[in-house]
Image (cartoon, rainbow, N blue to C red):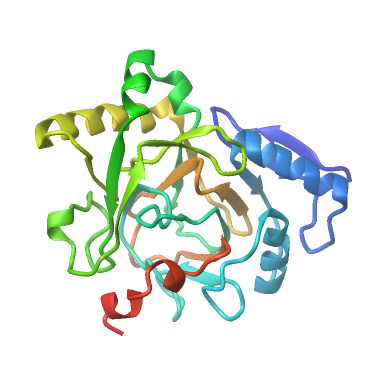
Amino acid sequence: MTMDLRDLPGPLGTEVRGLDLRRPLDVEQVERLRTTFDRRHLLLFPEQVLTGAEHVAFCRHFGPISPESRDGYGYVSNVHPDGILREGAIRFHSDLAFTPDPVHALSLYALEVPEAGAPTLFADASGVLDRMHPRLRARLEPLSIVNVYDFTLPTDRRMRERDVAPGSPIVERRMVSPHPRTGVPVVNANALQTDRVVGLAEDESESLLAEIFDALYAPDNVLALDWNVRDLVIWDNLAIQHERPDFPALQPRTMQRVCIHDKSLVDLVPNVGELLGR
């Protein structure tokens, strides 16, 4: 069976069939996947049967694996004993966008999915600039933002610098910056971690962020992915943002996760243990 790639509706995502990710990929297959990844930012591989080690081995085709765990993978789960981000909604964000060097890409492999569903939403932070009014885009390009994060605050609302604990990560980033691999400009403001626009009065900053978020999270700029067990998804964490709506807390949801980055969380937030109370 040959590899079959079909773009999902909207600006993001390509479904890939015809591959068994337990088997080695040849050079041509890897190149085609990477080219599609740069164009569509997200790849969906349904009906895969993978161990954690096989998941990690596949993700190595897209970059180095973050040394966040001994085995290279972990769990986003409300039932697994080692699960993180166990429950509740998580607003649109990019992982570690509150540091100078966010995660490059992420991959989730669905092990358990609630009967009622638990989709993930993905917003195109790159292509949205081409869909913005030229006047708004021109206004964004010279600006900077402040992104913040507190590991103990709820993730279903925007974090503000005035609320985060002392020592929490706070970083100033360009509002728009080129993707380090493709050079395509990307919006770095997001609904969870962005506190303000640098140099603007609070009311002006809030008004501008609201306008940006209206464009970023417009229905025609968002992919809603309904998970099935054994789905594997890998996405560009720099080019797109993701959100988890709330889901039934009593229904198991377990995703095996691999982070593609040459740094760990401790490298980027050295005091993370202290911030987590460890």
